Image (cartoon, rainbow, N blue to C red; front, side, top):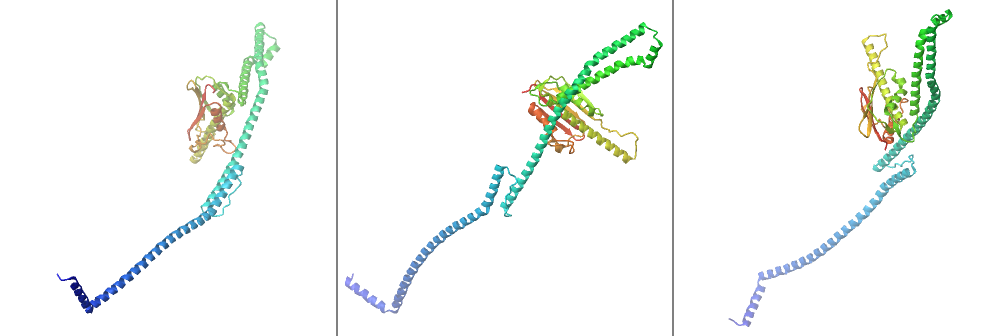
Length: 430
């Protein structure tokens, strides 16, 4: 192996030759250029890194600025929305509170827009107007009910007074009919004794007896007294019915004979019943019930009166149809047209159990329309023409039966067939 100094000298010689070589010079130049490129790349990398950092910083700033701007815009929109929506809603709320506190249904919410808030305000105004209208109707109905109640109270007092005043002379007549009848019978017996003891009376007596038709007089006089007694008894029954009917303010419930109560109610309505209406009674064995007699009279009179209205209306309709049919057929009759419908009211009583009894009143009248049946017990609702019905009868009946007696009142009806009312009453008043 050669020595180390020799080897260094060889390397120097080779390096000197390489530097003198042209290719070596170009390679050296290229190396220098590459070094410059690398330096520039390093500078550009540093610049890019700085630009990236600035971009990241700018992005963060933009995001933060956008968030701040969004918050500001949201706050502005919230404030605007609050003023645009909250203010009208506050006005609606304020008017609603005033209407509730002051009961002043003349107030109105100002409508300042046509959007949803404006529609809400307008709807609220319409609601206030409708409530105001309903209140006015209710006040009018209440006044009408007050007048009706006062009228009924006045009528009851008047009936009680009339019944009391008429009862005295009727009792006087009734009390004297039987003695008068006995006196007349005694006189007739005396005449018979005269005829037996004096078979040949004087001519003047015979002439007078023939003139007054003594035989017919003796026979008819007793009939007259019997008729008078029947009439007075009927008058006493009517007066008693009126007295019971006028007792609308019984202080406490008492024993009530329902059959007598129904019969007395029919007696009060007899002037309408005798106009061709058939009344069928099918009474069962009933105990007396505890109740308010005058109020029960009012219930039965109302229901029976409605039944009479229904059968009379159907009879009129049938008569009108018959007349129209005769005119269409060209036949004429000298006899007055009679309705093909026979007005009929049936009354049945039934013992249900140890606690209650039921009274059924049915008719073959016109019936109640299905659309009206749900409203029949509502106050002031009526199917009768204006001025004929007040709409208070059945409402009062329901109050009397349900609230005063703890019973029930229901009905079944079909147009053209008739109506049936079922009134259930407890035997003991609780």
